[in-house]
Image (cartoon, rainbow, N blue to C red; front, side, top):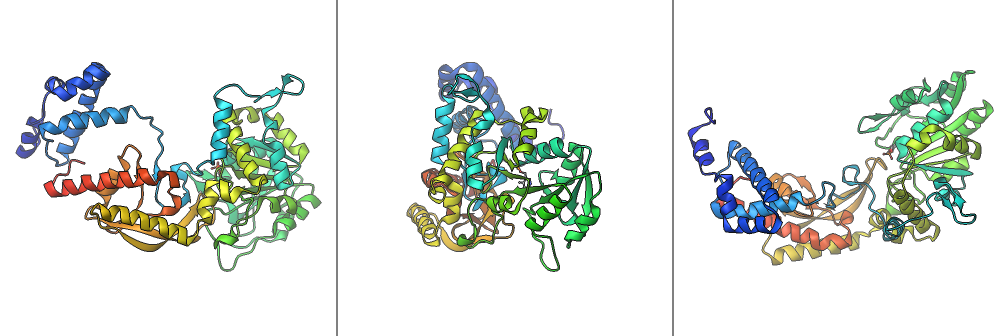
Length: 475
Ligand SMILES: *Cc1c(COP(=O)(O)O)cnc(C)c1O
Protein backbone atom coordinates (compact mmCIF):
# COMPACT_ATOMS: atom_id res chain seq x y z
CA UNK A 1 0.00 0.00 0.00
CA UNK A 2 2.80 2.43 0.85
CA UNK A 3 5.13 1.35 -1.91
CA UNK A 4 6.65 4.79 -2.50
CA UNK A 5 7.38 5.67 1.08
CA UNK A 6 10.84 5.50 2.53
CA UNK A 7 11.86 2.63 4.80
CA UNK A 8 11.79 4.70 8.00
CA UNK A 9 8.17 5.83 7.34
CA UNK A 10 7.21 2.20 6.75
CA UNK A 11 8.67 1.29 10.11
CA UNK A 12 6.43 3.92 11.75
CA UNK A 13 3.31 2.83 9.86
CA UNK A 14 3.91 -0.77 10.95
CA UNK A 15 3.87 0.33 14.58
CA UNK A 16 0.23 1.44 14.24
CA UNK A 17 -2.19 -0.87 16.03
CA UNK A 18 -5.26 -2.25 14.23
CA UNK A 19 -8.69 -0.84 15.02
CA UNK A 20 -9.75 -4.06 16.74
CA UNK A 21 -6.72 -4.27 18.96
CA UNK A 22 -7.19 -0.62 20.02
CA UNK A 23 -10.80 -1.37 20.93
CA UNK A 24 -9.51 -4.17 23.20
CA UNK A 25 -7.20 -1.79 25.14
CA UNK A 26 -8.95 -1.70 28.57
CA UNK A 27 -9.26 2.11 28.83
CA UNK A 28 -10.70 2.34 25.30
CA UNK A 29 -12.92 -0.68 25.89
CA UNK A 30 -14.35 1.09 28.95
CA UNK A 31 -15.05 4.18 26.83
CA UNK A 32 -16.92 1.98 24.35
CA UNK A 33 -19.00 0.46 27.16
CA UNK A 34 -19.77 3.92 28.45
CA UNK A 35 -20.43 5.82 25.22
CA UNK A 36 -21.37 3.15 22.71
CA UNK A 37 -19.08 1.09 20.52
CA UNK A 38 -20.01 2.82 17.26
CA UNK A 39 -18.99 6.28 18.36
CA UNK A 40 -15.75 5.05 19.94
CA UNK A 41 -14.89 2.96 16.85
CA UNK A 42 -15.39 6.05 14.68
CA UNK A 43 -13.11 8.07 16.99
CA UNK A 44 -10.45 5.33 16.86
CA UNK A 45 -10.55 5.28 13.05
CA UNK A 46 -10.39 9.09 12.88
CA UNK A 47 -7.42 9.18 15.24
CA UNK A 48 -5.61 6.48 13.26
CA UNK A 49 -6.17 8.47 10.05
CA UNK A 50 -4.82 11.63 11.71
CA UNK A 51 -1.76 9.78 12.98
CA UNK A 52 -1.09 8.31 9.51
CA UNK A 53 -1.11 11.85 8.14
CA UNK A 54 1.34 13.08 10.73
CA UNK A 55 3.61 10.08 10.06
CA UNK A 56 3.56 10.98 6.37
CA UNK A 57 4.62 14.48 7.44
CA UNK A 58 7.59 13.07 9.37
CA UNK A 59 6.28 12.33 12.87
CA UNK A 60 6.82 9.10 14.77
CA UNK A 61 4.00 6.75 15.79
CA UNK A 62 2.64 7.49 19.28
CA UNK A 63 3.55 5.06 22.04
CA UNK A 64 0.89 2.43 22.83
CA UNK A 65 0.02 3.93 26.21
CA UNK A 66 -0.85 7.31 24.62
CA UNK A 67 -3.74 5.95 22.59
CA UNK A 68 -6.49 5.96 25.23
CA UNK A 69 -5.91 9.66 25.96
CA UNK A 70 -5.83 10.55 22.27
CA UNK A 71 -9.07 8.72 21.60
CA UNK A 72 -10.67 10.34 24.65
CA UNK A 73 -9.65 13.81 23.43
CA UNK A 74 -11.02 13.13 19.98
CA UNK A 75 -14.34 12.02 21.47
CA UNK A 76 -14.44 15.17 23.54
CA UNK A 77 -13.83 17.36 20.52
CA UNK A 78 -16.42 15.61 18.39
CA UNK A 79 -19.00 16.21 21.11
CA UNK A 80 -18.45 19.96 20.94
CA UNK A 81 -20.40 22.25 18.67
CA UNK A 82 -18.55 23.39 15.57
CA UNK A 83 -19.24 27.00 16.57
CA UNK A 84 -17.54 27.45 19.92
CA UNK A 85 -16.59 30.16 22.36
CA UNK A 86 -12.93 31.14 22.53
CA UNK A 87 -10.63 33.60 24.25
CA UNK A 88 -9.62 36.59 22.11
CA UNK A 89 -6.21 37.69 23.35
CA UNK A 90 -5.34 39.54 20.13
CA UNK A 91 -6.25 43.02 21.37
CA UNK A 92 -8.52 43.61 18.36
CA UNK A 93 -11.77 44.66 20.07
CA UNK A 94 -14.21 44.17 17.16
CA UNK A 95 -12.61 41.14 15.50
CA UNK A 96 -14.67 40.15 12.46
CA UNK A 97 -13.25 36.60 12.40
CA UNK A 98 -13.93 36.12 16.11
CA UNK A 99 -17.59 37.10 16.16
CA UNK A 100 -17.29 40.91 16.49
CA UNK A 101 -19.01 42.40 19.56
CA UNK A 102 -19.45 40.26 22.70
CA UNK A 103 -22.92 40.87 24.15
CA UNK A 104 -23.64 42.58 27.46
CA UNK A 105 -25.12 40.71 30.42
CA UNK A 106 -28.34 42.62 29.88
CA UNK A 107 -28.47 41.53 26.22
CA UNK A 108 -27.85 37.89 27.17
CA UNK A 109 -30.56 38.03 29.83
CA UNK A 110 -33.00 39.47 27.29
CA UNK A 111 -32.16 36.73 24.75
CA UNK A 112 -32.64 34.06 27.40
CA UNK A 113 -35.92 35.52 28.64
CA UNK A 114 -37.43 35.82 25.17
CA UNK A 115 -36.20 32.51 23.73
CA UNK A 116 -36.83 30.10 26.58
CA UNK A 117 -40.55 30.40 25.89
CA UNK A 118 -42.98 32.44 23.80
CA UNK A 119 -42.91 36.19 23.24
CA UNK A 120 -44.95 39.01 21.72
CA UNK A 121 -42.69 39.01 18.64
CA UNK A 122 -45.62 39.69 16.29
CA UNK A 123 -48.44 40.10 18.79
CA UNK A 124 -50.08 43.30 19.97
CA UNK A 125 -50.58 42.99 23.72
CA UNK A 126 -52.97 45.97 23.83
CA UNK A 127 -55.60 44.59 21.47
CA UNK A 128 -54.68 40.91 21.48
CA UNK A 129 -54.26 40.82 17.70
CA UNK A 130 -51.43 40.60 15.23
CA UNK A 131 -48.49 42.94 15.84
CA UNK A 132 -45.33 43.72 13.91
CA UNK A 133 -41.80 42.61 14.74
CA UNK A 134 -40.65 45.91 13.23
CA UNK A 135 -42.11 47.78 16.22
CA UNK A 136 -39.71 46.43 18.83
CA UNK A 137 -36.44 48.37 18.60
CA UNK A 138 -37.95 51.15 16.50
CA UNK A 139 -38.89 53.69 19.16
CA UNK A 140 -35.63 53.32 21.07
CA UNK A 141 -33.61 53.84 17.88
CA UNK A 142 -35.60 56.98 17.06
CA UNK A 143 -35.31 58.32 20.57
CA UNK A 144 -31.53 57.77 20.76
CA UNK A 145 -30.73 59.22 17.33
CA UNK A 146 -33.47 61.77 16.57
CA UNK A 147 -34.52 59.83 13.45
CA UNK A 148 -38.16 59.87 12.28
CA UNK A 149 -38.32 56.12 11.79
CA UNK A 150 -36.13 53.03 12.03
CA UNK A 151 -35.97 49.45 10.86
CA UNK A 152 -33.78 46.44 11.68
CA UNK A 153 -32.49 43.87 9.17
CA UNK A 154 -29.95 41.08 9.23
CA UNK A 155 -26.74 43.10 8.82
CA UNK A 156 -25.51 46.35 7.34
CA UNK A 157 -24.86 44.77 3.94
CA UNK A 158 -28.55 43.77 3.88
CA UNK A 159 -29.53 47.28 5.01
CA UNK A 160 -27.72 48.93 2.08
CA UNK A 161 -29.05 46.34 -0.35
CA UNK A 162 -32.64 46.87 0.83
CA UNK A 163 -32.39 50.68 0.71
CA UNK A 164 -30.95 50.67 -2.81
CA UNK A 165 -33.35 47.96 -4.09
CA UNK A 166 -36.48 49.55 -2.66
CA UNK A 167 -35.70 53.19 -3.36
CA UNK A 168 -33.23 53.35 -6.25
CA UNK A 169 -33.74 50.34 -8.58
CA UNK A 170 -33.73 51.41 -12.21
CA UNK A 171 -32.34 54.86 -11.42
CA UNK A 172 -28.99 56.59 -11.00
CA UNK A 173 -27.12 56.79 -7.71
CA UNK A 174 -24.22 59.25 -7.43
CA UNK A 175 -21.13 58.16 -5.50
CA UNK A 176 -17.71 59.77 -5.11
CA UNK A 177 -14.80 57.91 -6.75
CA UNK A 178 -13.06 58.00 -3.36
CA UNK A 179 -15.82 55.82 -1.90
CA UNK A 180 -15.93 52.88 -4.33
CA UNK A 181 -15.11 50.78 -1.32
CA UNK A 182 -14.49 47.08 -0.69
CA UNK A 183 -15.53 46.38 2.90
CA UNK A 184 -13.96 42.93 3.24
CA UNK A 185 -14.94 39.37 2.43
CA UNK A 186 -15.37 40.53 -1.18
CA UNK A 187 -18.25 42.90 -0.31
CA UNK A 188 -17.90 45.80 -2.76
CA UNK A 189 -20.21 48.80 -2.81
CA UNK A 190 -20.27 49.05 -6.65
CA UNK A 191 -21.31 45.37 -6.86
CA UNK A 192 -24.12 45.82 -4.32
CA UNK A 193 -25.36 48.86 -6.23
CA UNK A 194 -25.44 46.89 -9.48
CA UNK A 195 -27.14 43.92 -7.79
CA UNK A 196 -29.88 46.20 -6.42
CA UNK A 197 -30.77 47.33 -9.93
CA UNK A 198 -29.49 50.88 -9.39
CA UNK A 199 -27.03 52.47 -11.83
CA UNK A 200 -23.79 53.73 -10.34
CA UNK A 201 -22.68 57.19 -11.46
CA UNK A 202 -19.10 57.86 -10.40
CA UNK A 203 -18.38 61.43 -9.37
CA UNK A 204 -15.16 63.41 -8.73
CA UNK A 205 -11.69 61.88 -8.47
CA UNK A 206 -9.97 59.32 -6.25
CA UNK A 207 -8.71 61.95 -3.81
CA UNK A 208 -10.95 64.99 -4.29
CA UNK A 209 -14.69 65.34 -4.88
CA UNK A 210 -16.54 68.68 -4.71
CA UNK A 211 -20.21 69.68 -4.45
CA UNK A 212 -20.10 70.83 -8.07
CA UNK A 213 -19.06 67.34 -9.18
CA UNK A 214 -22.28 66.01 -7.69
CA UNK A 215 -24.41 68.92 -8.97
CA UNK A 216 -23.16 68.47 -12.54
CA UNK A 217 -23.80 64.71 -12.49
CA UNK A 218 -27.49 64.99 -11.54
CA UNK A 219 -29.91 64.00 -14.33
CA UNK A 220 -33.65 63.35 -14.54
CA UNK A 221 -32.85 59.68 -13.86
CA UNK A 222 -31.05 60.34 -10.55
CA UNK A 223 -32.69 59.38 -7.25
CA UNK A 224 -29.95 59.52 -4.65
CA UNK A 225 -26.52 60.64 -3.49
CA UNK A 226 -24.71 57.91 -1.60
CA UNK A 227 -21.97 58.46 0.95
CA UNK A 228 -19.99 55.43 2.14
CA UNK A 229 -17.80 55.71 5.19
CA UNK A 230 -14.20 54.75 4.42
CA UNK A 231 -14.25 52.26 7.26
CA UNK A 232 -11.09 50.26 6.75
CA UNK A 233 -8.67 52.66 5.08
CA UNK A 234 -7.51 56.21 5.47
CA UNK A 235 -6.90 58.91 2.88
CA UNK A 236 -4.44 61.59 3.82
CA UNK A 237 -2.84 64.49 1.97
CA UNK A 238 -4.53 66.38 -0.87
CA UNK A 239 -8.07 65.13 -0.27
CA UNK A 240 -11.51 66.75 -0.19
CA UNK A 241 -15.11 65.64 0.24
CA UNK A 242 -18.12 67.90 0.92
CA UNK A 243 -19.53 67.87 4.46
CA UNK A 244 -22.62 65.71 4.95
CA UNK A 245 -24.85 68.77 5.55
CA UNK A 246 -23.67 70.24 2.22
CA UNK A 247 -24.52 66.99 0.45
CA UNK A 248 -27.95 66.98 2.14
CA UNK A 249 -28.72 70.51 0.93
CA UNK A 250 -27.58 69.62 -2.57
CA UNK A 251 -29.62 66.40 -2.63
CA UNK A 252 -32.77 68.14 -1.43
CA UNK A 253 -32.38 71.02 -3.92
CA UNK A 254 -32.54 68.41 -6.68
CA UNK A 255 -35.28 66.34 -5.09
CA UNK A 256 -32.87 63.47 -4.33
CA UNK A 257 -32.33 61.31 -1.27
CA UNK A 258 -29.07 61.40 0.66
CA UNK A 259 -28.13 57.87 1.74
CA UNK A 260 -25.35 57.57 4.33
CA UNK A 261 -23.69 54.18 4.91
CA UNK A 262 -21.93 54.79 8.21
CA UNK A 263 -20.43 51.30 8.46
CA UNK A 264 -19.74 51.06 12.16
CA UNK A 265 -21.35 54.28 13.33
CA UNK A 266 -21.32 55.12 17.00
CA UNK A 267 -23.63 56.72 19.55
CA UNK A 268 -20.71 57.63 21.83
CA UNK A 269 -17.70 59.86 21.13
CA UNK A 270 -14.47 57.92 20.55
CA UNK A 271 -12.12 60.89 21.18
CA UNK A 272 -12.12 60.66 25.03
CA UNK A 273 -10.30 57.33 24.63
CA UNK A 274 -7.36 58.63 22.61
CA UNK A 275 -8.96 57.67 19.29
CA UNK A 276 -9.83 59.99 16.42
CA UNK A 277 -13.47 60.87 15.79
CA UNK A 278 -15.72 58.18 14.28
CA UNK A 279 -18.90 59.66 12.73
CA UNK A 280 -21.71 59.90 15.28
CA UNK A 281 -25.03 58.42 14.17
CA UNK A 282 -27.05 61.26 15.66
CA UNK A 283 -24.88 63.78 13.75
CA UNK A 284 -25.79 62.10 10.46
CA UNK A 285 -29.46 62.44 11.34
CA UNK A 286 -28.97 66.09 12.32
CA UNK A 287 -27.01 66.83 9.13
CA UNK A 288 -30.05 65.83 7.08
CA UNK A 289 -29.25 62.36 5.70
CA UNK A 290 -32.52 60.76 4.56
CA UNK A 291 -31.48 57.13 5.04
CA UNK A 292 -28.68 56.02 7.35
CA UNK A 293 -27.37 52.47 7.68
CA UNK A 294 -24.92 50.94 10.16
CA UNK A 295 -24.02 47.64 11.84
CA UNK A 296 -25.39 46.40 15.17
CA UNK A 297 -22.23 44.50 16.09
CA UNK A 298 -19.49 47.05 15.47
CA UNK A 299 -19.15 50.08 17.77
CA UNK A 300 -22.79 49.85 18.81
CA UNK A 301 -21.69 46.70 20.68
CA UNK A 302 -24.86 44.64 20.09
CA UNK A 303 -25.87 41.61 18.02
CA UNK A 304 -25.27 41.21 14.28
CA UNK A 305 -27.88 43.45 12.66
CA UNK A 306 -28.26 46.16 10.05
CA UNK A 307 -29.91 49.28 11.39
CA UNK A 308 -31.71 51.65 9.07
CA UNK A 309 -32.75 55.13 10.18
CA UNK A 310 -34.69 57.48 7.97
CA UNK A 311 -37.67 59.53 6.92
CA UNK A 312 -41.00 57.94 7.81
CA UNK A 313 -42.22 57.70 4.20
CA UNK A 314 -39.05 56.03 2.94
CA UNK A 315 -38.75 53.56 5.84
CA UNK A 316 -42.41 52.60 5.32
CA UNK A 317 -41.54 51.75 1.71
CA UNK A 318 -38.65 49.58 2.94
CA UNK A 319 -40.96 47.68 5.29
CA UNK A 320 -43.39 46.95 2.46
CA UNK A 321 -40.71 45.73 0.03
CA UNK A 322 -40.66 41.93 -0.56
CA UNK A 323 -36.95 41.81 0.40
CA UNK A 324 -37.85 43.01 3.91
CA UNK A 325 -39.21 39.56 4.67
CA UNK A 326 -36.09 37.84 3.35
CA UNK A 327 -33.79 40.11 5.35
CA UNK A 328 -35.73 40.26 8.62
CA UNK A 329 -34.16 39.46 11.98
CA UNK A 330 -35.29 36.91 14.55
CA UNK A 331 -36.44 37.43 18.12
CA UNK A 332 -32.97 36.69 19.57
CA UNK A 333 -31.47 39.57 17.62
CA UNK A 334 -34.28 41.94 18.55
CA UNK A 335 -34.03 41.03 22.23
CA UNK A 336 -30.26 41.57 22.32
CA UNK A 337 -30.51 44.78 20.33
CA UNK A 338 -33.20 46.33 22.53
CA UNK A 339 -31.31 45.48 25.71
CA UNK A 340 -28.13 46.99 24.22
CA UNK A 341 -29.95 50.17 23.23
CA UNK A 342 -31.46 50.41 26.72
CA UNK A 343 -27.92 50.56 28.16
CA UNK A 344 -27.38 53.69 26.06
CA UNK A 345 -30.68 55.19 27.19
CA UNK A 346 -29.79 54.61 30.84
CA UNK A 347 -26.47 56.37 30.16
CA UNK A 348 -24.69 53.16 31.19
CA UNK A 349 -23.17 52.05 27.87
CA UNK A 350 -19.56 52.53 29.00
CA UNK A 351 -20.18 50.44 32.09
CA UNK A 352 -22.39 47.74 30.59
CA UNK A 353 -21.44 47.12 26.94
CA UNK A 354 -18.30 44.96 26.56
CA UNK A 355 -16.99 46.76 23.44
CA UNK A 356 -17.06 50.07 25.33
CA UNK A 357 -15.68 48.57 28.54
CA UNK A 358 -12.71 47.37 26.49
CA UNK A 359 -12.22 50.70 24.72
CA UNK A 360 -12.52 52.55 28.03
CA UNK A 361 -10.16 50.23 29.98
CA UNK A 362 -7.40 52.30 31.60
CA UNK A 363 -3.69 51.59 30.97
CA UNK A 364 -3.24 50.96 34.73
CA UNK A 365 -6.05 48.39 34.83
CA UNK A 366 -4.63 46.59 31.77
CA UNK A 367 -1.11 46.58 33.24
CA UNK A 368 -2.41 45.15 36.53
CA UNK A 369 -4.16 42.31 34.73
CA UNK A 370 -1.05 41.50 32.65
CA UNK A 371 1.07 41.51 35.84
CA UNK A 372 -1.32 39.03 37.45
CA UNK A 373 -1.02 36.71 34.43
CA UNK A 374 2.77 37.00 34.53
CA UNK A 375 2.88 36.14 38.24
CA UNK A 376 0.68 33.06 37.70
CA UNK A 377 2.90 31.76 34.88
CA UNK A 378 6.23 32.43 36.59
CA UNK A 379 4.96 30.68 39.73
CA UNK A 380 4.54 27.60 37.51
CA UNK A 381 8.05 27.92 36.13
CA UNK A 382 7.35 29.52 32.76
CA UNK A 383 9.16 32.61 31.50
CA UNK A 384 6.82 35.52 30.80
CA UNK A 385 7.56 39.19 30.26
CA UNK A 386 5.50 42.36 30.09
CA UNK A 387 5.86 44.69 27.09
CA UNK A 388 4.19 48.00 26.28
CA UNK A 389 2.09 47.52 23.15
CA UNK A 390 -1.02 48.60 21.27
CA UNK A 391 -4.59 47.37 20.88
CA UNK A 392 -6.86 48.24 17.93
CA UNK A 393 -10.60 48.74 17.62
CA UNK A 394 -10.99 46.73 14.37
CA UNK A 395 -14.30 45.88 12.71
CA UNK A 396 -13.70 48.39 9.97
CA UNK A 397 -13.77 51.26 12.45
CA UNK A 398 -10.91 53.70 13.08
CA UNK A 399 -8.28 52.20 10.72
CA UNK A 400 -4.71 52.66 11.89
CA UNK A 401 -5.84 53.91 15.29
CA UNK A 402 -4.37 52.29 18.39
CA UNK A 403 -4.68 52.43 22.17
CA UNK A 404 -1.75 51.76 24.52
CA UNK A 405 -1.82 48.49 26.47
CA UNK A 406 0.45 46.08 28.34
CA UNK A 407 1.14 42.78 26.58
CA UNK A 408 2.08 39.52 28.23
CA UNK A 409 4.94 38.12 26.12
CA UNK A 410 5.95 34.45 26.27
CA UNK A 411 9.19 33.63 24.48
CA UNK A 412 8.93 30.28 22.70
CA UNK A 413 11.29 28.29 20.47
CA UNK A 414 8.36 27.15 18.30
CA UNK A 415 5.73 29.91 18.60
CA UNK A 416 3.58 28.62 15.74
CA UNK A 417 3.35 25.19 17.36
CA UNK A 418 2.55 26.74 20.75
CA UNK A 419 -0.15 28.92 19.17
CA UNK A 420 -1.63 25.84 17.49
CA UNK A 421 -1.64 24.02 20.87
CA UNK A 422 -3.48 27.01 22.36
CA UNK A 423 -6.07 26.86 19.61
CA UNK A 424 -6.66 23.14 20.24
CA UNK A 425 -7.65 23.62 23.89
CA UNK A 426 -11.27 22.82 24.87
CA UNK A 427 -11.74 26.61 25.00
CA UNK A 428 -9.33 27.78 22.28
CA UNK A 429 -7.12 30.80 22.91
CA UNK A 430 -6.19 33.06 19.99
CA UNK A 431 -3.16 35.29 20.50
CA UNK A 432 -0.67 37.29 18.44
CA UNK A 433 2.69 35.89 17.31
CA UNK A 434 5.59 38.28 16.92
CA UNK A 435 8.97 36.78 15.99
CA UNK A 436 9.67 34.16 18.66
CA UNK A 437 7.07 35.37 21.13
CA UNK A 438 3.41 34.78 21.88
CA UNK A 439 1.65 38.03 22.81
CA UNK A 440 -1.50 38.30 24.92
CA UNK A 441 -3.45 41.57 25.26
CA UNK A 442 -5.63 41.83 28.38
CA UNK A 443 -7.88 44.43 26.72
CA UNK A 444 -9.95 41.85 24.80
CA UNK A 445 -9.87 39.01 27.35
CA UNK A 446 -13.17 39.18 29.22
CA UNK A 447 -12.64 39.24 33.00
CA UNK A 448 -14.66 36.01 33.34
CA UNK A 449 -12.28 34.24 30.91
CA UNK A 450 -9.02 34.84 32.79
CA UNK A 451 -9.14 31.45 34.51
CA UNK A 452 -9.74 29.65 31.23
CA UNK A 453 -6.94 31.62 29.56
CA UNK A 454 -4.36 30.82 32.24
CA UNK A 455 -5.40 27.18 32.47
CA UNK A 456 -5.23 26.78 28.70
CA UNK A 457 -1.90 28.56 28.55
CA UNK A 458 -0.32 26.39 31.23
CA UNK A 459 -1.63 23.21 29.60
CA UNK A 460 -0.39 24.24 26.14
CA UNK A 461 3.01 25.34 27.44
CA UNK A 462 3.45 22.10 29.39
CA UNK A 463 2.46 20.11 26.32
CA UNK A 464 4.81 21.91 23.93
CA UNK A 465 7.65 21.84 26.49
CA UNK A 466 7.24 18.06 26.78
CA UNK A 467 7.27 17.68 23.00
CA UNK A 468 10.48 19.67 22.83
CA UNK A 469 12.13 17.40 25.42
CA UNK A 470 11.26 14.24 23.53
CA UNK A 471 11.84 15.82 20.12
CA UNK A 472 8.39 14.80 18.93
CA UNK A 473 6.47 16.64 16.23
CA UNK A 474 3.18 14.79 16.11
CA UNK A 475 1.19 17.99 16.70
C1 LIG B 1 -18.87 46.84 7.96
C2 LIG B 1 -19.42 47.68 6.86
C3 LIG B 1 -20.46 47.21 6.05
C4 LIG B 1 -21.01 45.82 6.19
O1 LIG B 1 -21.67 45.68 7.41
P1 LIG B 1 -22.08 44.22 7.93
O2 LIG B 1 -22.86 44.50 9.18
O3 LIG B 1 -20.84 43.47 8.13
O4 LIG B 1 -22.94 43.61 6.87
C5 LIG B 1 -20.94 48.03 5.06
N1 LIG B 1 -20.45 49.27 4.88
C6 LIG B 1 -19.45 49.77 5.64
C7 LIG B 1 -18.94 51.15 5.37
C8 LIG B 1 -18.90 48.99 6.66
O5 LIG B 1 -17.91 49.46 7.41
